[in-house]
Amino acid sequence: MQEWTCTVCGYKQKDPYPPESCPACGAGSSLFEAAEAGEMSSGEKETGAARASSRWRCVVCGYIHEGEGPPETCPVCGADRSAFEPVEEPGDKAAEDTADPNDPPPFSGEKKKKFTPQSHPREWADEQILVHHAHPISVHIPNGVLPIAVFFVLVGSLFNAQTFKIAAYLNMTMVFLALPLVLYTGFVEWRDRYRSAMTSLFKTKILCAAITAFCVTVLVIWRSFSADAGGFFFILLHLIALGAAGLAGHLGGKLVFAKRG
Image (cartoon, rainbow, N blue to C red; front, top):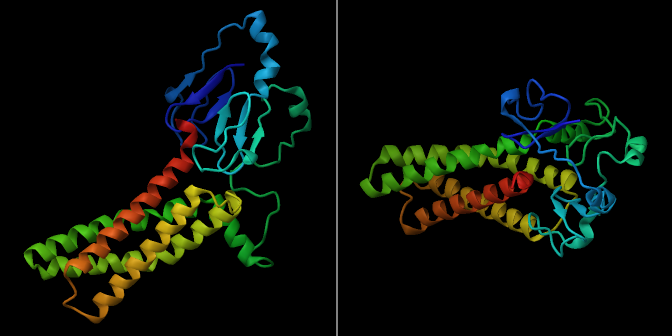
């Protein structure tokens, strides 16, 4: 059985031929590459079982470590070694016999227990947030609109252009209105997908989210009650909000794409 890897998203599948399209990102079959499958020597065959226990998965973020034991800390999310579990090889017959095909893959966001909007509206909504990746989608609003707002406020302040200042205010208001959705979906992701882990990465992301929300709220209220809002501190708050949002996005990307290297 040949293993095929999607060169776009890193998805792996074992089949004689590559799939017509990647089930994860939709890439065509031409974007799959075959893993090198050289013949194993007798020594390698003898150590095959040992290698199975040499792979460790972080139960928080899914990072895979190869070594005789788990690392002291996860290089992706910062979880300590107690958060690692040994990985069983897909070819392990014992694992195949006990595996339930209906079980969701680790960290997929899917749950075995399904909720209905009538009986459990809150649980059902949280389930949809995970299944449909609402946080990565919604977070594009502040990460995409904030740079525009900062650019407009800098141009407006430099040339005293009221049109740019108004545009900056309207864009910042859009970010302000989107933040409750961004923060709540992020909380659900952290609570359910990452098991409420309080590692250095998640602490930093939470701090960045709090700083961004504070700065944006102050800026919108300030500008709403003062049409002449401006000056060094006003611009500084814009830059702090942009930096905090950018850092949170960078850490999120590091967490999500850890397996791509």
